[in-house]
Amino acid sequence: MPSSRPDKTRHFRIGVVPVSITSAHRSLLNQYVSLYGHWRTEKPADRTIRINVSRRPFSAIHRRRFIVTVNDRVRFEPARADETLPYVEWAVNWEIPKVFPEYLQLHASSLQMDGDGIILPGTSGSGKSTLTAGLLARGASYLCDEFALIHAGTLQLHPFPKAICIKKPSYAALESVGLKLHENQHYYKKTKGYVRFVNPVGVHARWMGRPCSIRYVIFPRYVQGAEPRLNPMSRPEAAFSLHEVCFNLLGCTAVGLDVIVNMIHAAECYQLVSGEIRSTCALVERLVRSGKGTSAEATNIRVGAPADREPETTRKNRALAAQVATDDRDCRRTVIQSATMEES
Amino acid sequence: MTLHELDGEALIFDATSGDTHRLNETAYFIWRTCDGTRDLTAIADALCDAYDVAREAAEEHVREIVTLLAERKLLVDPS
Image (cartoon, rainbow over all chains, first blue to last red; front, side, top):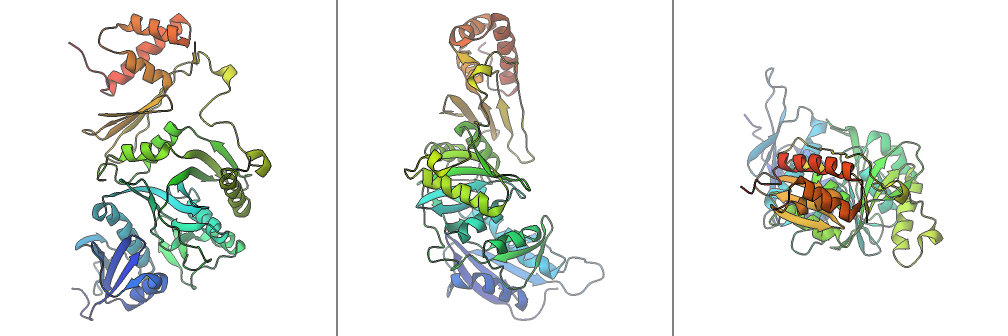
């Protein structure tokens, strides 16, 4: 039986995503308001994502103490109080493609620098949140640390400026760039261990990005101690990789691949080996500045050879390679790759 | 199926199965050349004409790529 204490509801509109959260669990509401108070609204917005968190009465049988429902469906049953807010965030994330099918949702951080949209796609552990926070601290405008929300009609990137979730091993890196972790509150995520949040609101005067076109697609991969470097990536490879981190390929109002391909025509694509946060951020900034009329040589960008191409002299009559990639979702992705040959 | 040509390569999306396939430049060339009128030898000839590739290697590539394409249901039997 759920708690009999009166429920409280708070409404928010976080960028393009409205959320209404109801709970009798006062500390959870306080935590959410503390992170998202900037976005509070008096009334629920149209298509608000309704979250309800209730508490099970004590039971020797049930280890799960909380129930998180989204739009009236039970989504999670966390066992620990410090897991609840991360599960609320996760529940909102999962609901976005259902409620807002007009957006293609990619697993990627998103930012705006000098008016250009940048997405940093990658799965958990690639370092995208830490890099995003670092770039924000150095003056980039923030859109989201977890998703790129691309409008299927306009191909523009839209803001969902949720709090930035930082894993414990990255706390020091964030503090080294002058960002404050939000309050002294730790949370627990099953997949990430202990985490804290960075509240992006007001980090600097132009902290929040506006809808913008995507100019750079950068796939980060954190390698401890590595010297940061950018390797150009072919657009087909980038499009295929983006396709793999898309949450609503089939559920979007447009065909997901169409959106990705149309968007990527106007983008530059790179793989980024990221290391120490300040030098990695500086490298990304130099890349963006180099696109504003300053040559790459002048800005000293360390750019490697294209990752998917061999030098011309070796591009001949190589043995056929076929690589098949599959994932654990409904869709299957394959790469059919013949030998690289020179055109006559 | 929807086909996107991007920088000489192809991305093919099968809306019925949800499968996506990426064909590199030469795999895409072979796929395009499978027009229902040419046999493997003729496709290998076309590959040799278009690319700097030895005849024997071309035949082997064509055979393997056509097998892969058929396995992925990207080719249909014209009969």
